[in-house]
Image (cartoon, rainbow, N blue to C red; front, side, top):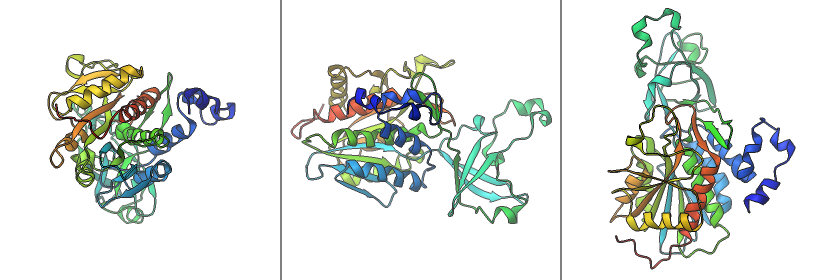
Length: 379
């Protein structure tokens, strides 16, 4: 469906349904936008991706010939499974979060970090504690600023001193709802901003998993010469674990990791270190040892030919993404990384662009359509 016809599907009722910014969605099909918003609203820290993964499967199965989940929690959707030449897309589905380590006599939940928590942003956060029955609302408390000493105000909170308040009277009351070992994440908080931007917890990297599903949607009605494996990977935030095991099982010829990358269009960012990348200017393409030169060049050529906005960055080593695991699977995989520019990484208000998501899916789908089984990716 063209972007024009997708725009025509929106009505005034749709626009005003939830916010005055709803018109911003005209650049994305309504079904796709609804899936993005609902996926970001799911809670799934590393090792506990079940809710997010099953939601991803329910949507993606409409565009796949086969779909399955594995023992590691990965979701794997396949198009044209009979083809020998395999292309794997990896967008990790897990998000940073917490695990309950202790319940105090006062009924407060003490936690450990799951993934790279930004400790500076923790106090005052709303969270969901994920129990066997349901999700419990809670807040991360903090001593009032009036009661802190000047030196305390200059320090980031230490994780062992963090507590979640669910409103329990005491430990016995808290244990009616929560147990040690339960996970927690930031509470869903999707918000549309101006100029096709949106903010939410978990953009890293539910947006990448969203794009993997979107690519399959775009390719579902096209004739393919290769097999395409769209994988919503698990446990990336604690060591690229889901990508490593799923890639070993799939044994792809080509792998494309889809993740978020650092946007440098905010105050205080040193562009000499992270390069230049802005929201709304397209996906970020990379050069460096983790990027197969042939595949990297093909992505750039496709972007230019199809006039897809794109940006460039470099990484002098192994990227901290699923591309790092993909490249060294078995005898090696021709690997690339395509990143969605993201502001405020690993906070509760990560911010991305709807148009960047659309262009990322378009670029990857169009690149796959240029790949043939006889193509060599040996540099």
